[in-house]
Length: 622
Image (cartoon, rainbow, N blue to C red; front, side, top):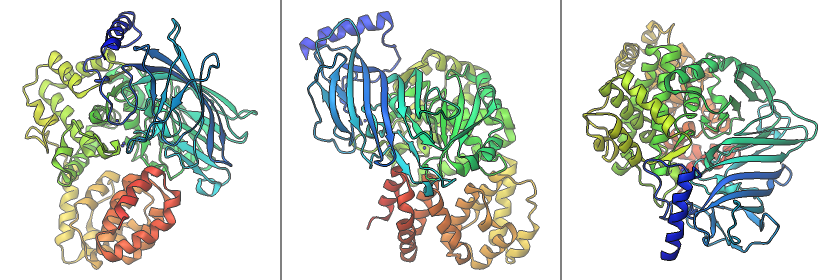
């Protein structure tokens, strides 16, 4: 999925006390230290904070612009302070008060990586909440927005656009306070071409209308990184009482079949940690250029078509995005340094959902693959980047989207569960999600809450503020994958690869068995070994993206020429960064591989989202 005065103080403090007392602002343990300049944002929410956004805009595919107005309803803790917004590349046309009065504004010199921002002088404070109307337009190169021609879509008949706001890209298509520590409700009225359907991370239509005008409501407060929009030739089909799928016509039936267990997942999640609070849980399958597996936009998960394996073997991703409805969307990391509070909790919750729906045997295979990947990545990262509490000052928050936040975070929570027992741990987590619902949380706030509610005999600092993996790492044992590892070892050391491969009993192997097998093989393999594997198991012909990715890493290492056309088609046919980054990184290990990578990238780059382009640009730079 993942990439920052004395006279005023008296009045500000008084207003804040009153606001807390009457419930205008939530009280959270470990609140964001808002009085300090945020590392990834121009916002000063301690002074002026957005409470509601209304977007009224037109989507123009010809000019590749979203143009209109953003009406911001503000809470002003400091009546003399300016409104500080995040803006990156937006063309600001005017800023007005609710009654049409022109307001003075300026766009300061851009801070590296976070844009120029927008500072607005506000009118004299009144008893009513202040509203500011920003008229603006995006540019055709807005980093959050990908405009796709008909040829770049699945059905190749109509254009498509989608946004990706996480981590700090919302500011490239909406003026906002682009930090996870600020939550707001929002509404929108959008005009799109009449033959297309618009959907957002909000209440959504399920079919096109005759006007091209669509209205949306998100009544629950969310951070800006969960603002999301997609416009395309979309169809909808329900898969449960409160769940359904949007997709292009040719993808819809396959997607609905793949997600048949969605309602079971929602029910399992609710039994664990309380009610689902977002009304509906729908999924939209985007064109293949979407840079992530999924994005947990509330009410409407954005998903990659690469999980449509035809056997429901990759639906753990849906469990993950659903789990974000509690961890992340409901209780949110206050800053990107606290990213593990979103992702570590979500991986833990995902594992529990998968266990509830598919059984412990299945979920432990997932846990073992997770552990193996974590152990490999820890060796590649700088020590400071292996703390759970990150330090991303001066860096893109995407740098924190490693397996540390996700998987070290997961094993930290799993360790706590094993220490106190599942019953007590589940009660703690359920209470945590309920107590801090629709609030932002810091690492320190969570640890304080943990120590106040559970007695845990473990060195918490060794997990949160120390490098690497602690001695108290949980043990994951799965006989299923131990047998797979033994098969991989036998194949690697054997003298007759084709005979050994033909003897494998793989009839009941799932995607996860094959992932472990391919990742356990000692690379590089010989040409004879690669041929034997491909002849027996048809890896080059696989339509499963996870298996294809792992196979292609071996293909590159062995320079296995029969699979090179598959490598090219895979890199040009989808834009999921999880797959692109390792493959391009592997290619550039040799001069010939680097030349091939640049050749492929020349073709593929125009179809990649900016998130993926930025990553691959860095890998291939001279």
